[in-house]
Length: 332
Image 1 (cartoon, rainbow, N blue to C red):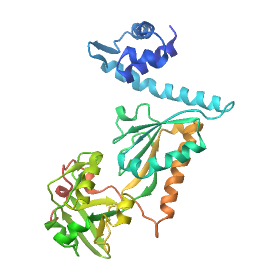
Image 2: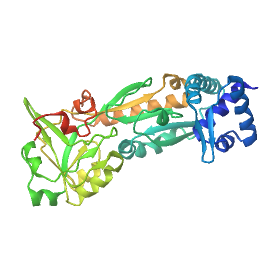
Image 3: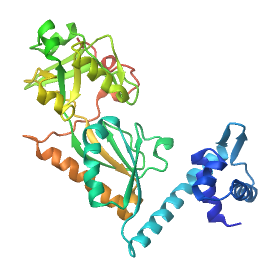
Image 4: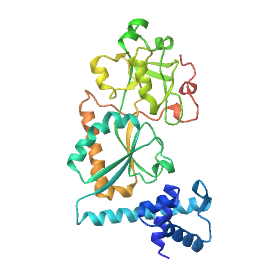
């Protein structure tokens, strides 16, 4: 048995959840994949997959074996890429996991520039929310907003964001613009749910030594993936939203969204995190992409009047409260 080929087939079948998916990836027959995996199971003396009419699922032993083999397969892939780079340009694919808000505001506008510089590199863009085993498998680079648990990934904070409280001019005209954060308690606010599932209904503020924490309420709560729905509602004049200071710049510039409480700042400043496995930094095409992402966010920071420093992990993320307001007594 070709052990290395069997491991590649096994890993691909686990990722694809089918023998046919692995066969398409390697351009071989399903029978060839099945033969190798059967031989691997026989040599190990354990069943790696449960085979059902709906596909494949790893057994407990199979999942443990895949976890043990994955670092070696990743190291081999990186070694292959490094060797190829000495004799050719840097073709291939960079797989990027990114949250919607970062992709929309920064990555998508910048990608044509990256392609113009490196037309031989293909970018595979995937949705990413949390550093779970399923979401990190097969991904080279991650761009994450907030305070993720990175596990064994290298994590670099490359930027940070401030929050702005905004609404359409028609909403402020009808309901009045608040002059103190406590007044938000009587407004229709549109909280979002973080990637961990917590409803971020506690909006915090500071002005010099003065601090305020307001429990906001409204008729709509959206997940982070559906933040555009909350923005559409705010643009329609039906509520108050909290956005990042580098998002929705066109709407802010056009006056379609108007900030309130501009003499206050939020003590929460979520960082933008660039995460990756240490081994992929040696892969030339991944290194080029990492350097490019760093460049994009350095350009953002250069547009600020003063730098924004990322804040520490907030209290409402340290326990499964369900709602951020549950972490603070006395929030208005």
